[in-house]
Length: 249
Image (tube, rainbow, N blue to C red; front, top):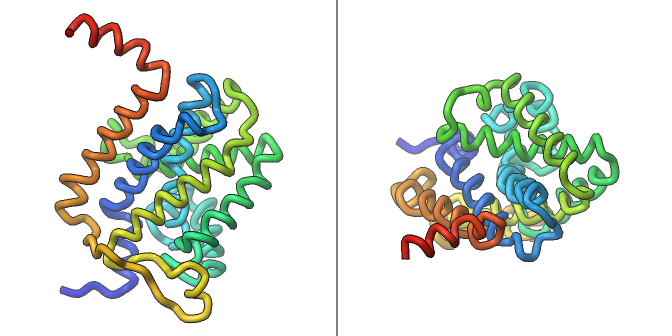
């Protein structure tokens, strides 16, 4: 049965691809640690978590989706505004030029103040928790109150024990680009940068079906392995693992 456009879009935001976006964001965050402007374990954890969460950010352009309902009206109402400004789901926020630039500039403005930086990082953590709830024990992260407590508590803890959050805008740009790259692999594709404003058109070179076996059996495990490998290679965790590997060798 052929799904209408709205139903296909909702499946994109709520289905398996959501987990793939968050996992690909975590993997990208771990892979980019050597170039990220963060130092120390806490700041590195914050960077990886933020990129993973911000890899879900473009899907806030769909009001009523699981991601937009994360904090109830606090996210669903702004999601409606994002949808209007972006001219619908998978358009403005998924433009490989406009999406990173506009969202990055908004994040830059937010990084000027502690409270807005806290909000931004809490949003990233909340998005990651919501997207990855299927692999997290319990259900607290999948409820409005539970997600609010976990995301805001985690954001406060990370910001209190790490240097200035001036890196948040860059984390937004990296996360958004990761999301757009992932959607570019699906049959729905992403808009042709800037040109879609004149004539709506999309780029879809691969046509991967959302939730297909290749995504669940290949991409998701690949992102998990890549995240672990890059974390071991780029953080202090390597100092703990190397002696164990030496003993086994």
